[in-house]
Every structure is written in structure tokens, then in C-alpha cells.
Amino acid sequence: MSIHTYGMARVCGLAFILLASGCGKRDAASTGDTGSGAATSAAVRVADVKVGRALGADKRVTDETDEFRPSDVIYAVVETQGSGANTSLQARWTYQDGQVVDESTRSIAASGEDVTEFHISKPSGWPQGKYKVEILLNGATAGSEDFEIK
Image (cartoon, rainbow, N blue to C red):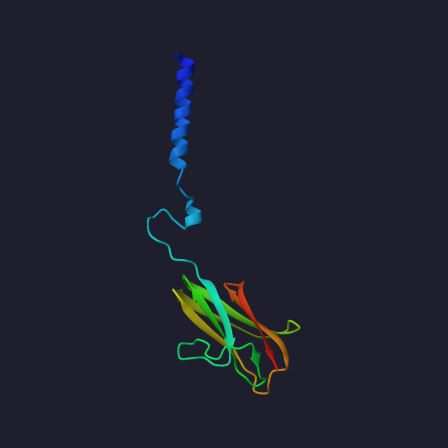
């Protein structure tokens, strides 16, 4: 074997080894691996938003509906999954023209599956029409539900 052929064989062999060693590895950013070997907790996410007329002792909607009477208390329950301290959940209630009728924020320390309750009421009665509750998670829209006052 000539020196030139021997050198090419070494370069090809080295390239093969490098290529083979990279196969099967995934990017740490895509797997959430920080390189510490410890499992990281999943970020908080909104799993579901439900609206209704009544809540149970577990803060979950027991009378789910999207049609309300003007005098009803309207509940929105946000189901979250994941873990994170100092997570901000905000409910923004709007009337059909986009007018904000109420806004409230809850700071939660999420851990696993959890529920957070928001509600609005108006003793003199809500005007008839279409409404929406938009849920923001740390300032970003994470879910919404439309409903109507009839």
C-alpha cells in the first residue's frame, strides 16, 4: 500500500468513527437534558379551560355550559399540568365588541396537575350577547372559551 493510499484510508476511517459516534445522540435542547443527569420538571402548560355555572369542592366545574342567564355567576376553571414556581395565570373576560369587562390574575406554584378558578358576576345582570374568557399563561395566550348570555 502506498503512503497516499494509507493516508486516505486513515482519513476515511476517522470520518467513519466520528460519524458513527454521533449517531443516536440527541440535541440536549430538544430533550430538555441539562447535562446534569437529573430529570428536569416539565414547564407549566394549560391543559383545558372550562366554563360553567357551578363548582364542586375540588374547584372543578360541575355544571358546564356555554349559555348563561344575565344573573348567573360565570366560572372559568383552568386546568394546568407541569411544574413551576411563580407562574402567572390571567383571565380576561370580553364582550362581543372586544370590550374588557373584567380581568384578574392569580400567581400559582404549579406542581403536576392543578386547577385554578376565576369567576365574574354582575348583580344587575349581564347584557345579552357573546362573550369570551381568554386565559394567559405568563402573559401569553394559552386558551379561551366562548359563551353567550341569553
